[in-house]
Image 1 (tube, one colour):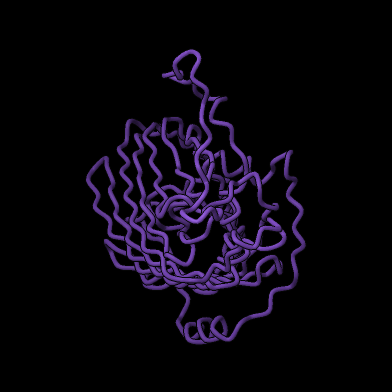
Image 2 (tube, rainbow, N blue to C red):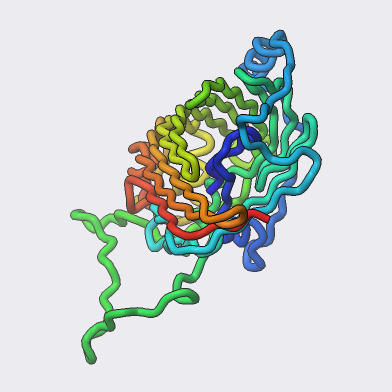
Length: 325
């Protein structure tokens, strides 16, 4: 759950431990064939349009920044969860959040992303990067039972009835997560542009599959506004994400690879997914601070009409304390 990736943003960048365990799952080892990314036409336009901007120092004394040339590590403990829109998909617990980053003069590593800063000054930033496409995270298993116990048990003698997956005409209306073939992790190559204002930021990112897994693309446009006091910070970030047919169909389409039953086959299509996120932090002392964040993402019909998808949104929430090393 990366929230902020800008080096000069006063808000910390977080990724959930559950995501990290998904990336390195022993049940599904991470084996990714990364091909040399070819710059798509839109990437060339993005880069060429902004290389004419004069490079300046990105940070000043009024903006807290990550220490250049040093590893930056933060950890947060609390309670929260991220919903899973898939049929029989487990909710992912947000118990531990970590932030691992290193920024050089131009090269940087920020959690699951490694990139190169093309432009970095007070008003604009441009970087190209490689990052894991987290769409596959919905398909990796996480056992909530390891962290919680059932509060209410069914009455004695009454068996648990499986849900009815038959439509009105006896056709399959859904297919469960454990009935489909494995969805692989993809590595995306992207270019991101930041437009900085004293209390806000507009970001445009374009990504394409560099690993050849789904051969799709995505674009993300977001606006973030900040409010800050002496010991607190608050931000709200509405955004709009476009995902291509290839990306959505690889993960949520149903074909012969998943089931021989033609009635359940589905060709998923791309579309737009709006979302909104909020983040609040309050300083406790030089090392500790309170953290609360929540987000909501609306999924488009080309994805939610899939027999594999049970929900039309994804919710995420976390409340806890953070420590900066």
